[in-house]
Image (cartoon, rainbow, N blue to C red; front, top):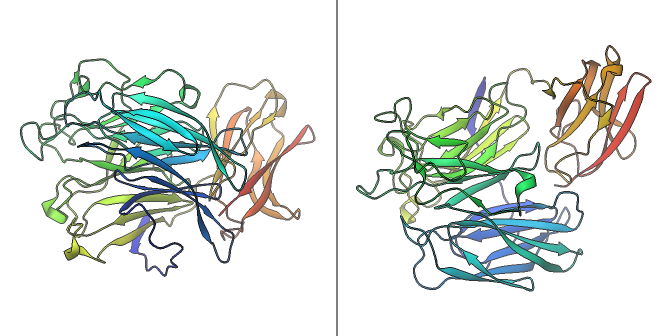
Length: 450
C-alpha cells in the first residue's frame, strides 16, 4: 500500500538570524510567510519569485507577556480570506496561564497598526490587507474559548472549516499521566468570527481512562483520544502537536480524514515513549487508529506533518526525543507514499438531484499544491458524457479529472497540481472546464502559487 524512506535534503538558506528565536511554526498564504516560536512575536515575511526567492520582513505581531504563562502561543495558521484577493486571516491560539484553571488575565497585542487585548484559553484571528507592499491591520477577533492548549490548526480544503487540536489536562496526580483526553475540534467556516465558540475547559472534558464526558457542557469534540482499544489499559497517544488533512491521492479509507502527530513525552523516544504514535482519524466514521504505532524503536515524536498529492511527510526532530545539544543534527524527515493505483479524482458528495448545472470556484485559490472544484449535474444530464479538464494559460490540456458518464448529483474533484504524466506543473493560472454533452459548459480559473 505504501512505503517510507528518509529524505535527503539539500537546502538553501533564505533568511538568517530571524528575530524570533526557536521557530516552531511556519505557514504560507499567497506570497506571505508566517513564522513564530513559543511565546515569541509573529513575523510576517514576503517571499520573492524564483529563482532567488528573496525574503523580506513586512510585518510583526507582538504579544506582551508579563510573568509566567504556562501555555504560550506556539502555533499559527493563515489564509487568504474567502472571496478576497487582498485580505488575509491569521489564526493563533493563546493557551491557559496555569495547568488546570480558567484564565482571567489578558495580554496585549500590537502590530500592523492594531492594538488589542488577548484572552487566554482561546484562539484569536487577526485580519489585515496587503496591497503588495504594505500590510494594514483590519481587526482582531477572538473566535474560541474553553481551550487549554490548542495547536495544529488546519483548514479543511473542501469547505474552509477550521480544525485544531487541544491538549488535555495532565499532571494532576502523576507528571506523565493524562487526566483528560486530547481532542480534535472544528469551527465551521460560517461560524468563524460570530459568537465565540466555548469548548468547555476546564470544567468539561472527556476523562482519559474512562471516556466519560465530565461536565457535559461546551462544544463536543470530534475526536477524544483515549487509549486503544480499552481506555483503562490500552495503547496510548498523548500530546498532539500537528494535524494535516490526508493526501487526496491516498487510497480510500485513508484520504478523507486527518493525520495527527503525537509527541508523548518530550524528552523520550523509541520504546521509552509509549505515547507517540502517528494517528489517522477518519472523519467519515468518527474512529481513529495508530497508523504508525507507539512501539517503533527509532521514532522520537512525529511532530511536523505535510500532505501533498499521494505523499505524507513526517518530521522527527530526534529519534531519542531530545531537543538538547546531544541530539543536534539527528532529526529526519520521513516520506510515506502511496504506490498503488491512484484513486478517482472525483468524489460524490450527495445523491440528492440538484436543480441545475453548476461549476463552483476552486478552493483554496490561490493554492499550493492542490485544490478542489465542486460541480453539480441535474436530472437533465443523466446519461450524457461529462468531462472536467484542466488547461494552462496557453490553452493546452494539462489533466483530465473526469471523462465519464455520471449520475445526477453533486461532486467534488481534486487536482493535485500535476499533469497527465504525474509531473508537478509550474506556478501560474489554470482553467477548469466542465462540459456535459452539448447542454452545459462552464470554466473557472485557479492560480497555482509555489
